[in-house]
Amino acid sequence: LNHYKMDDQLAVNFAAALPQLLAQGVQIESLLLGHNPIGVKGCIAVAGALGSCLHLRRLDLSGCDLSDNRDAQTNPTSVLGETLKNHPTIEALAVAKTRLSDRAATGLLHNFEAHRTLNELDMSGNSLGSAGLEFATAMAEFITNRPEPDFPALRKLSLGWNALRGAAAEVLAAALGS
Image (cartoon, rainbow, N blue to C red; front, side, top):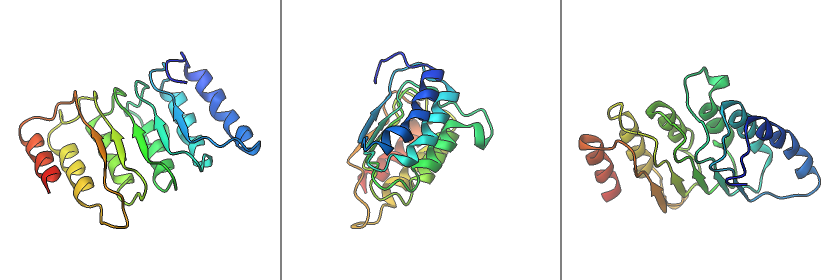
């Protein structure tokens, strides 16, 4: 469904239809919704429905609106983080170019601290690092505090096209070097 021109209303309808599809035996392993004009309302609806997708391994919301200037109930990254926090099978999450703030990205990372299956993360193109060291520090902790062998290593991390410079880049480089 990438580049499908799915707007907020289609995303809400899709999220409402997910339980019916799953009840019919459909198993969704990859949900690729990237580069659709899905706004906050649609992102919240989709994120809320993901808990029932127990076979989901890959989620791509790149290019959707995950901006976080709202309270926790109407903040798409809060809903997404809470839904995926204990998701049993999610391995890859792409939230590139989603207007993530440092605060929202840091919140997502905290939700994934004890996650056992996530091993690919794409947060590129979000201006992360522009608010100081908060995000870089959280990412460094996320990278270095994954106790082996219970947790898989983070195999793929995309942070390009962000504002990670100077001290923030040094913090991340030190974490990646360890």
